[in-house]
Amino acid sequence: STEGNKNVLKENVAAKNDSAVSTSTKRYVAEDGTNALVTFTDSDKENSISVRSNGKTISAAQKSKTEDGGVYSNFDFEIVSKKDTVTITQGQNVIVLVKAPE
Image (cartoon, rainbow, N blue to C red; front, side, top):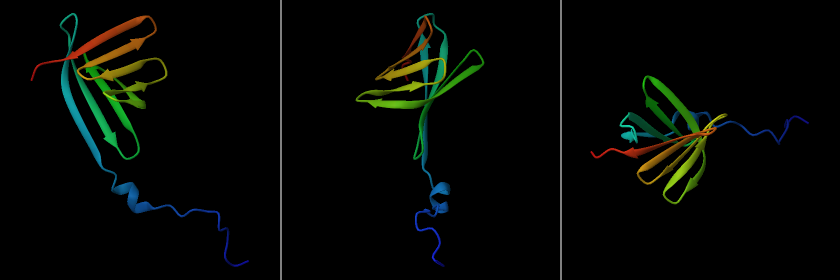
């Protein structure tokens, strides 16, 4: 047959370049007063979160969306955002960040 494989989908290359990405960075504060910058990134392909504090950054992809936030996870930690709080859990360590007043 000269038609080729009809089951092969042609890739839409234009869509790759047009993906809309929005980011929002806010300052959060831990219970001990440590500042952290939390960035939420939303795109057509993936939503993610990154938390930067003390010169270190952790990032994770969103696994599920909730009514007032989301659940993000990476291979060894989970980050849950809910309204004005972000909770980072890694093993037995739990860090709660509260959005700083603007």
